[in-house]
Image 1 (cartoon, one colour):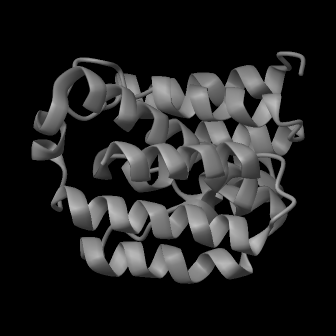
Image 2: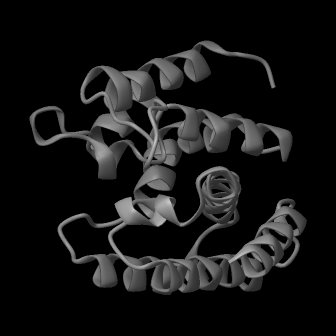
Amino acid sequence: MVLTPRLRAAIRFSIQTHERDQKQKRKNKDVAYITHPLTVGLILSGAGADEDAVIAGILHDTIEDSVAEKKVTREMLHDMFGEKVADLVASVSEHTEQSWEERKADMLSRIANYSHDSLLIKSGDLISNGTELMDDYREFGEEIFKNFERPKDVRNDHYLQMIRAVIAAWPENPLADDLKKTEEEIVNLF
């Protein structure tokens, strides 16, 4: 995929939201959070996703992770990137006003009704987070789970449920094999 003006704008906006507005970091390490949405965008591009889906992948955490004073909304994304991008980002965003259990149950229940593009974005997100978690575990061990909201077994069980729900919702997903590999590695590692 070519680096179009829209893709460049999405990258700049994601950097603004995650890095400039809040200096957001990945859990347990001094790594800028922006590495995650950019990785999701790369995964989606490699899977043949269209420009809107890649842009939505780069922006997928902007609504749920933006700070109150600089809140990103679906309407803002609509105005900047169009209806499809705004809908895709909104579809994969958690409702942060809910408890952890409510957010995760809600997300899991919504997967069955996702469009293929939403499933592709969620797949890229799961692969990016899962592979990073496994790499961190290999490097740092059990320490990595100290900064998560829930214990390792609860978190990993939810993560595996999400992977399985995405595969069940779209078995022909171009990222299905990567999801299955991630699932297998998580089961074997933890």
